[in-house]
Length: 145
Image 1 (spheres, rainbow, N blue to C red):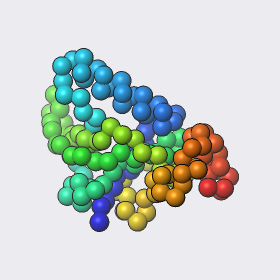
Image 2: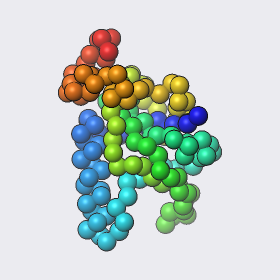
Image 3: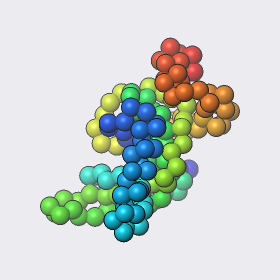
Image 4: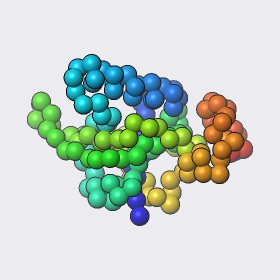
């Protein structure tokens, strides 16, 4: 069974913000002659790498709610220019909206068990997926989703 990570998407106001940021970074990599690849750099290396790479995703918390996920492709440890151990969480570029769920702020990332992860909006929530993100967020806050 897959294990996921959950992380705050600092600076993003919406899923669209996240998608725009990803597109900008990929374009810059192409322009710089690098292989376009989406990754997130983090300080701590997960200890349960095999479980995460067995179908896991990185779930993003946007404005206090779990809002979207990206499938995990790889986890690559490295040492930065200052000698600090870090890792790249290599992600699929496609951002998948999930059924919004409140989440309190936290630092770093946390593990998220598969059975506790919110389902994708496309899974029995096609009508919800068509709603604007802000409306989904408000309905969730009111307890209507």
